[in-house]
Length: 127
Image 1: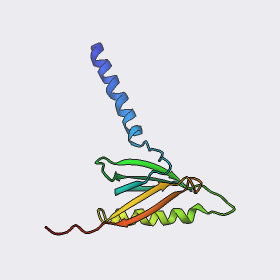
Image 2: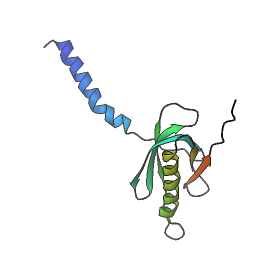
Image 3: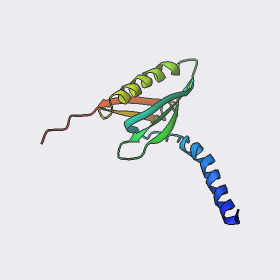
Image 4: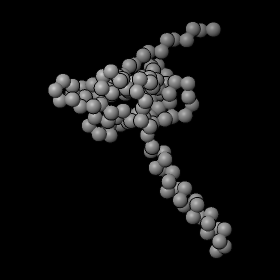
């Protein structure tokens, strides 16, 4: 086999190995920035207080993946209840694509807790 063919095969096999890891990469959301999803493609609870959401953000065309963490404060806050409410909102937006906007925002004032909002889209007027 020629050296150029060996090099090309090495590059292709390396790219094939790295591709799945780049697709699984998730972004950490910025504080006080609302992430409004036009569509929710997947929603996963990756740890007891961490959710991973993949979808298309408002104004974008390609899906992105974000990881939101619900911080635990045993004295006054149980993240499981807050997280389960976000679960329901995300699942509703998944079952009815295009009908709702699902918003997640990490809030600085609440110790970095994500806040969830589900908004029904207004009907487009008929021409």
